[in-house]
Amino acid sequence: MGLCELFDQAVRSVPASRPALVIDGRATPYGPLLDRIARLRTLFAAKGLGPGDRIGLLTEDVPVLAAVLWASLRSGIAVINLNVDLSPTERRHALTAAGVTHAIVDRAILDAAPLPPGLAHTVVEPADGGGRGGLIGRLLKPRKGEAAAPAGLLAELAAVTPVDPSPPLLSPPPTPETPGLMLFTSGTTSAPKVVELSHGNLSAQIETFLTVYDYDAGSHILNVLPLHFTDGLLHGPIISLVTGATLFRPRRFAVQDLGTILHGVYRDRITHFIVVPAILSIMDRLHGEFDDAFRTPDFRYIRSSGDRLPEPLWRSVQERFGVRVVNTYGLSETVCEALYCGPAEDRFRMGTVGQPVDCEIRVIDPEGHDVPAGEPGELLIRGGNIMRGYLNRPDLTAEVLKDGWFHTGDLATVDDDGFVRIVGRRKTLIISGGTNIQPQDITDALLVHPGVADAVTFGLPDPVWGERVAVAVVLRDGAGSSVATTDLVEHCRRHLAPHKVPRVIRIMDALPRNPAGKVLLDAVRDAVDADQAVNPLRADATLEERILEIAARVFGCAPSDLRMTSEARTTFGWDSLAHIQLMEATERAFAIILSPRDILGVSRLEHLKAIVAGYLDRDGRAAS
Image (cartoon, rainbow, N blue to C red):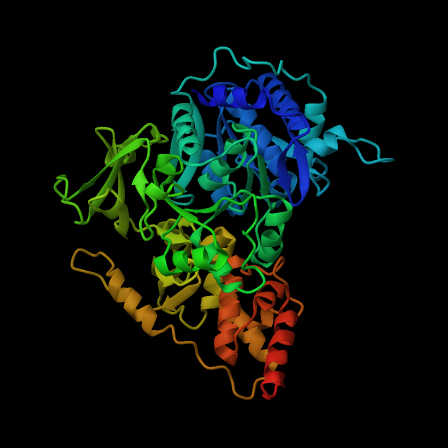
């Protein structure tokens, strides 16, 4: 069944009052959401948008995003949902590379930097969301005593008549070959790789979801992953609206909110929790009061993807929380997933990524021959979920799609029972917290700096996030005294999205290379690892000075850039990754173990200072 037919089948019978989305506790019912989708389709037609066009989404308003996504799919228009945290340079490059016809963009994003010249766009004004229930709530129900003064997208929608919501919503409907969703897999500042997914690809993935998972109209799906992730979209506003389920999510995930999110599992009758291993790693530290978070009559299982799930972490989470963790494997090129370890017992083997469902796999040697069971080789996948190709890059498409087989670049083994283990990666991609990072993006940005002569980017192992971004830099002659690592971090912040800013920078005299000129990454990593021992804090420093120094090292800035009042939501570099690194660095520096309440309770540096002072006082050590 096609994607639109699945959608029609689900929404035809869903009660209008049932919540479709619950964002930060605010509900958007199905009735108003479906009406908005119908109005958007009229608006798109009025703007001359139809099959063959591409809409770019740059909004943090989840109800707007969900409505535009489905209105576009129902109209045969392809959608690309971009990371709102891209730098202005990355954003312009991405919109241009994807050939976006029309952009839906938040006012704050547009005010911060212009879109590419001539790109048609519609603005999502603050009144469209503004923390008051989103577009749908504002359009249908202005606050009592408040004059309805719609603007931007809201005003345009109020002025149109919705198309007939009864099927068929589009005649003829999109074909399986119609482009539906586009995803950036890498290269927002270097050579772009935009994955084109057709309606056939998307419906094949959804059909597999319905086979593997027990998604239904009664499902309450909690997904904290960003919506520019394929996992965020597919296990979010796509699967929820083709099953009549309810999607719960924060507008933007922060590690400080994890306790509140876990406490809400019972209240909201959550059935599925969608995460990446980095979040499981954080949860594993939050023992004690959260151990029974998933022991409710409604909860079914946790689903993890996006990065390697270490077996000790996997086992610990299952035993501690008393819940099954389903591990999956997939890439943007496979829509979302292709191999499944669980939830069914006969498809579950801890330490593996499970078995293929609705697709075929091979494991081959460098000559293209299938390897025996247990021997490593490159993993190949073939099925209806394999992408159309990379947009406008037939050369790159031909490299990975051969005779219908997608060459993943990942090394795997298959045992006699058909269970697959990922044992290595041929690609240079860095995966940090489930986010794919193209090293060349960071290197290209660094080489723009006038003081940088050479640079290389790579991943270093991280116990929580899988990998962290590291760079080795060679400065131009005469620049050594004028360029500090903090200068390079600030430069990267101006040119790159926050998740790409290096966490480790090593300045070297020269990069080791082989006779062909290729950088010897192993030698660079060894040099950086040897330099990773943290310089001891000054013995005579006050507690406040020590906290500021630790935070500065984690955030990649100077201590003078920070204050005790510095807080997570406004301090650049203080994201979920940096938060956990800050907690771990504090534990090492003061030889203490922070509690879950401590970890989740720090939103300002003064909070951390007070917590550390309490531990030192209890131990009889001077807090100074």
